[in-house]
Length: 108
Length: 112
Figure (tube, chains in turn green, brown):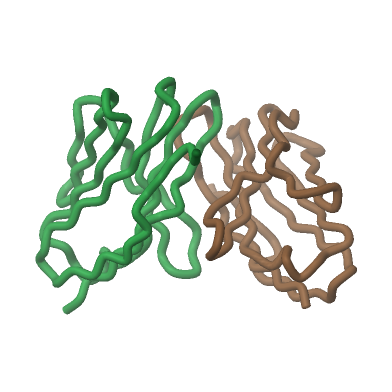
């Protein structure tokens, strides 16, 4: 079983839509959680950390459910510039485990 | 700070040749990670170092791959001999602790 699993998509949504991605992880001892964004032919970049109480950064909301071992990312009022691949990342035992990413395309 | 710097950005080589990828960490970061990314398998951790010491190299595909960290700010990943299936984007990332990575821009390797 993979450490981190994500739906690869693709998600194709119209501009202004709300879209949500989920990610599950297998190690219950995982300590920290992140969402990274990767644009085509670029390196992954940290989008936001995910805190136990949930956290928001503008149009982006991240949530963690330890009991069910999943994290989520919600994007409201999606923009064309949100088109990218979103990678779920879980830190356990000083190692970072990446999901394979969820592809999002926002359509005009 | 210039961030994590990788070189070369692109490398095209013939099968059987030696390839050396280079990475300069962000000053003050003590962990370094080498990843390989392909469409089929996504991001795969090859090896990581903490304070210049290799901690886990279980992701290194085979003996043709080797990585070194001769000092606190620099690392190399060597493939000898290279094969077409090694074609991928190789990322180096550094971290000051267990809290988040910063990636380099990657080296796009093509072995023909």
